[in-house]
Length: 81
Image (cartoon, rainbow, N blue to C red; front, side, top):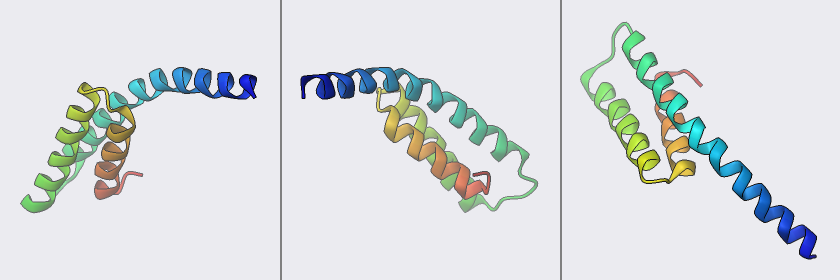
């Protein structure tokens, strides 16, 4: 049982840096996709930009799981997932 718990804790600490590195790449991908959109109405542009800004704030606050979800939401809005 101790081995199982130790393994779970180790996995958590190994996965956290991976998520920290995933956020910026997803945020950048969303920013680039938004720039590449030929036309987007103002409401959609604001919604996507708000998601990107929120994802960056979550990343900066160390909330990497949340930042990944928010950045992926922005990409889905852009149709790039």
